[in-house]
Amino acid sequence: EELTEKTEALAVDDTEQTSDVSMPSLDQYSELIASMDIPKSTLADETVLALKLGYGCPHSPSEPCPACHKAFYEWMKALYLAFKAKLGLEHELTLNSLIDCAYEYIKAYQLTLCDNLLQEGYEACKARGKNDSYYIKMIQAMAFLRFKQSAFKEAVVLFEEMREILGPNPSLLENTGHAYNSIGDQENAERCFTEALDLVAKDPNHKAHKGGLLLGLGLVKTRRGNPEGGLVQLEEALQWYIDEHNGADNALIAKAHVSVAGSKEELERYEEAETHYHEAIRIFIATCGDINPLTADAQRKLGLLLVTEKKWEEAHKILSKSLVANVGIDVFSINLNSLVEITLALVQVQHELGKDDDSWYIELIRHALLRLVERDENISQNSNFSFLFQLCIKDIPPETIEALTREANSQ
Image (tube, rainbow, N blue to C red; front, side, top):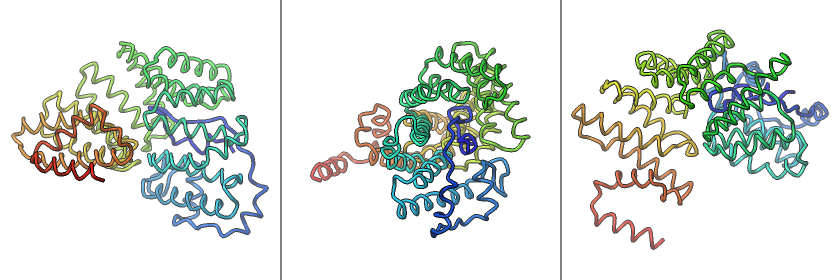
């Protein structure tokens, strides 16, 4: 089975994740599986089959709704644990279920759960050899994960390792190009996207998503100071995704809307940019949920645009939603720079509206900082963390801070 079929709903940056790794058949284990007590999903059998094949659910035909997807990846985790308990970590059924579950975690932005799961199986896959399909599938999953954790340089290294093993192919070049784009290496990004399009032109049988390649090149042009030229390709990519999904809601369409909106905002076509941001947010909420990095970031971008337009009431509403979402997402996805931007914008907006009460968002920021420190105590050295921390303690009496510090040091 092609890994492409298992991962086509994943996303690296503004495009679709795909792979050309073929996995060995598991048919030889059919009798073994039949003899085991396999966990039962809470979803209907036909829904499970649809999700396995990369389709949606009864509530969302293009991709699963958040509730059905959660039930699906929880069932996949139960499968992995059952195989691990019965067969051991090194068995192919166990490794296959581990990696399949990891991909579902990535789709759902459950990055902490995914990281823990992949670390659990990494050595077992590596021991099979670097040319083994399970190892390749593992490092691809880790590359996608590192990208979504904003560890873009690590993602580039992993994608390049895959290229050394597999050779160039459009899907891999597309993913690598987006990783290069994210570290500001537009030259290598453009090389990857252009090479991918050349390969597709020479062999139409190559599995590739033209929309993702067009988005990549559009973003490269925009970041190189040619937003007009970039916008042409971004709009073409958006239409490609709309046609590809027959107009049904899909997160990839929403991501394309965000990219188009960003270029139109740069060109000061603010009203048009607003329309694209609103549509992106609507689709993200429908397909990914309210508390999701994609939803949160699109709301942040729209909120900042509304501040630029001095639409204070609308800005306050959308920035408030964005802050709630940015604080509630998986801790690996919390972006301190985004929190600072939202906070500063809220301070300005509340001043313009004559709102003095900042306690509601200060409490949210405190919660986010606590979660970040629990994950990595060294994050307190980050300048954005320090700024937000100072904001959070501004109303706490000095003697209380001193007492808390003494208590913490005595632990």
